[in-house]
Image 1 (cartoon, one colour):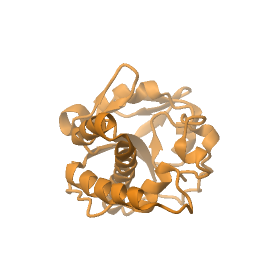
Image 2: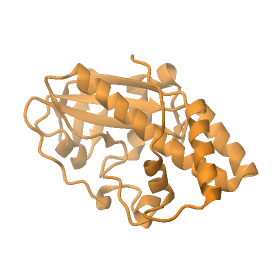
Image 3: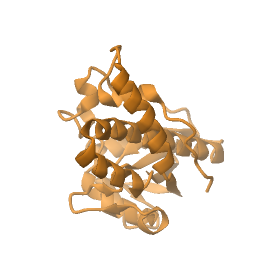
Image 4: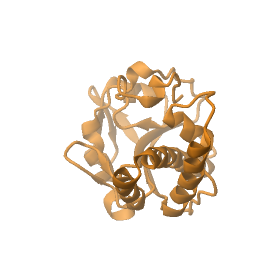
Length: 225
């Protein structure tokens, strides 16, 4: 696995998570932005794992070959339509980020919000870098976008079994709690389809997302796609 280094974090992406759009930023916030970016870069420990599976379609969803994992729902079937293989991936930036968010929530609430936004931007950048690594390895294939566990009608309850199939607890330290949320919280699981044929661009929309009604990005008038 290639090492991933965060040289810088996209400030515009972090501001989007904060809900800022064409809004003047005061000096106090600018200071928190600079501090948070530097601290996230220092504390982040990017780790990732991915495996490539053949898969079969069932009435319930899709099943990864040589596993007991069936991902249920029509959304994942549509996502992998006309694909020959599926890439299962898990990515995290580590427990140090969570620890600092907890500390800041008790000592500097304003900074904790900014730090959290930069952490979210950081995990997104790491996921993009992992996607680039996968694209480089499978040059002969076209790739779909990342389809997260919990997106569309794919149940979030698959999270624990998905992490288990990847051996992500042992390999990169991701665990899954009773509420199906991952620890560290700045972690991502996703499926990418690989196809020899041109992939039709999917129509992504907020209505298919489990965060619908509780999304800070949408509340700010933006969207994530």
